[in-house]
Image (cartoon, rainbow, N blue to C red; front, side, top):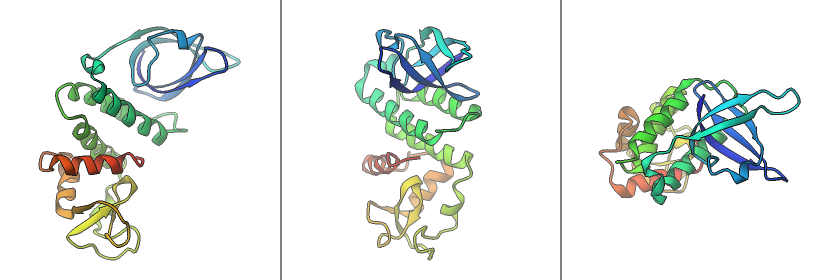
Length: 206
């Protein structure tokens, strides 16, 4: 079985509780003496075996780290781990998550080897919003705070909800550019400074 490690929780001993996203689910496993094993790391893609436990969490054994070439580049690893942490909180308490989220990480893991990781994850987030049916509010062209019509410039709340600059204080964006970003799940038309601002908003939560 393959999966991505989205969260690691140390216990009082050197054991670990590990949350792993597989194509079918996001589940917690127990790893004896996990702190001693280099194959356990936040964001790692692993191949593993599950051993059921009638009295506690299933154990994860025979772990093989399926590494990526970019894992030696700190900046890419930082962005990767940050996004996976956001995704773990977003999917918290969800057991059956479907293949979309696993496949999204599979695609991102390939792209960030050569592309700007901020752009990669912003574009994947646009696809996530579409998949979850959360783009409707933006398309209504109304402020999520006061419900009045928006003008040409907007600010963004958590989950990229549109607002008037006077309703939500923050970075101001051209509305048409943000709509284009959602429509094509692409940041090609955005400057680096705009990408950095969008990333900061994304880090507020999915």
